[in-house]
Amino acid sequence: MGLNTERARTAGSTRARRVGQLLLAVLALGASARPAAAQARSEGYGAVVLNAPASVEAAAYGNVPYLLGGGADLLFYSPALIGRASGMAASLHRYGSEGTLATLAGKGAVGLGDFAVGLQYLRYEGVGIAPTPVVPGTLARPGGSPATEVAASLGYAREMFGLFGAGVVAKYIELQFPRGMDRALVLDLGVAREFGPTMVSLAARNLGSDLDVGGRGLRIPTHLALGVSTRRFEVGELDMLLTGQILRRRDGEMIPAGGVELSYWPVQGYTFRLRAGLQRVAEDERSPFTFGLAFTGDALTVEYAFQAFDVEGNAHRLGLSFR
Image (cartoon, rainbow, N blue to C red; front, side, top):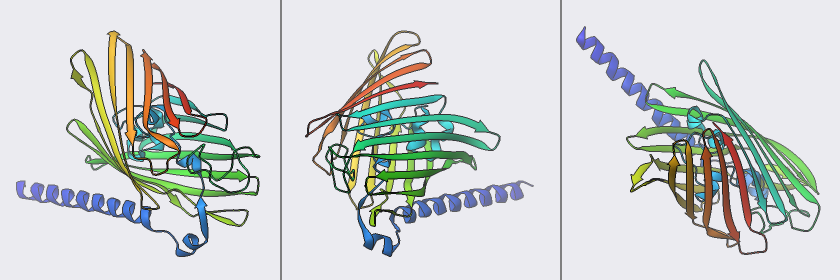
């Protein structure tokens, strides 16, 4: 009996390892494989809404999520950690006078796992398809007709074999430019596991077909992101957390980034937070430094984040979350 039990345990462990290896292989292949024809006709990047920070907290850390947090906006960064999320989160991001991004996310649960829904809406000034420094990577020029981008997300996650979490997010994207519009469906895939006081996440984001607006091919901004976050630890009378990420963009650029938070609670249930981040900037339109503040009173958190741009109009972000 003991021998049979040991064999079953060994077989189960082997199956779990093989499943994990398969998931990692799918993530790596999905992040790099694109149809040759689509690459040949592409002239720029579309779906900027998928590049912009979707969370005020993440924006303060250099667009890096805190993987051990419980915000519903984890949906936009790590599909495998949807189960850790709770409540609702909403944010408004203002890029000078030229662009506005609004996001909304909520979390629920079903018998076989956890799910989350999200909405991102970006509006900015634009004429035709040309780069602009106002929102990095956009395909419109300031001062013209407005362009809009919408991404609606539905995510699902569950624990696999008691070893790691796995998740998938389906996104419907719609782009409307002065010269035309297009729609697409893309997927995020992710796995995550906690190792002692740290959480590690691997996610392939925005996997799908390229876009075509007004006869011009636009590439989806595919990412492969490896993130690590620590649990909060005490530093004197303060709490501190660290979070970091290495992101590989579709064009091959490697974007390391990380952030830190110091928090202080003078009264139980009321916490003040100071956040800062640093990221490699492949383009020179924005500062690599980010900054943020937050206040939590019971279940409600109010957040603010700031990033300077080299051109007129900085990024100010305000968010509310309820858990």
